[in-house]
Image (cartoon, rainbow, N blue to C red; front, side, top):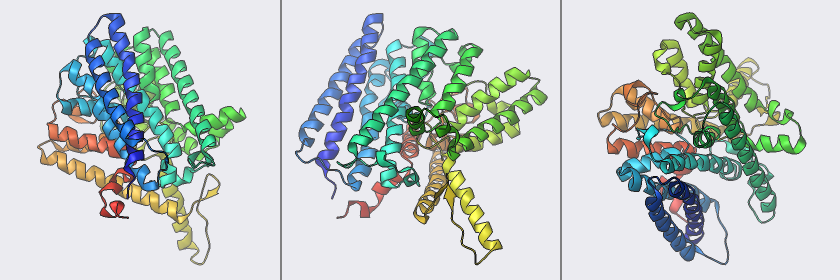
Length: 481
């Protein structure tokens, strides 16, 4: 059976941290004299009260979590935290709880889909809260991908199991040290991104918000025009830090500790992500120069920005790539699902799963050529056991089934095929904008019916938690002794 007291205690801890971060936009509203002070104050009190109740009920002398408890905690934390973090949107923007929950789930899963418009004139407190949600969601997923998912063997993540993934009494000091180092790297890169934006001409508020949402590969902006609202220099800064946000943060820690950049450069996943980014950018840049008469520099800027924004599932807008013709649209449709590296802030399938699939294909081809031969499947110079391969295959199958089911549900609600399919993909892959006139790069998700928003919220959560983490809760066997 699930031990609910520790589960409640962890939820209480998370809610208490959410309430503490709510103080930041509350103070901003008070200092600037703009809307949000009383509303955020109400949200803080409600969240603190809920956290106190959970901590009081869940407090126990022996705090031990089983694998089953970890599955439940991982899903409930994101679900419940989003509900309380949605309160400021209801109180300040006077939108329905459905819209507020969608906006919050999109933020905390770093998806970037939005139902809000008129961002240029919106209260600074709510704009900052959106950005904080994405920044928290980014670091939250990194820690989860490093310390939780490998232990649960979700979607082949056991491949990245290290000492820092073991949260037992024996290894927890090591795990906590690694977690602190990851947070330090995350903070440092956020600071560098902020400084870069300031140098390009953004004001203090714009630079802070976009630093939060760039490194977290979230994609929320302070303007309806997204990155089109800012100078070209900001596009290059965004491209650089979106790329860095798509790299494994555990390797950043290893590279800094050993003072060797080779820790990043020698990793198969990093190389695969880099090749995908460079080749795709060159293809699109060449297309823009030949077909649309872009200058070479502008073609590179626009193509690299859009490619890295989509492949890292950031979702920043810079021109409508669906208007560039059939080839770019087809390529972007694939890149929306691809994702960057495991252990980064990005969503999607992740590069390592494609690489595992290719090594499996190579092994099968060699078996056809040499039926009696013995071939060892390797990744990053390490053997890949059948358990990891099965997990990767299971993830890939459920990923596409989830997209099909959600797209079918959206179609049943009367949405057109492009909106249904791209909406499903962008939710499950945590990309942000979809395709078409409604939810494309120049639109948003406000016109969709409430049922569609709840379905897409579920898709965003499933995508962020690698699908199987949430799906296992719906199996009766999970709840049996």
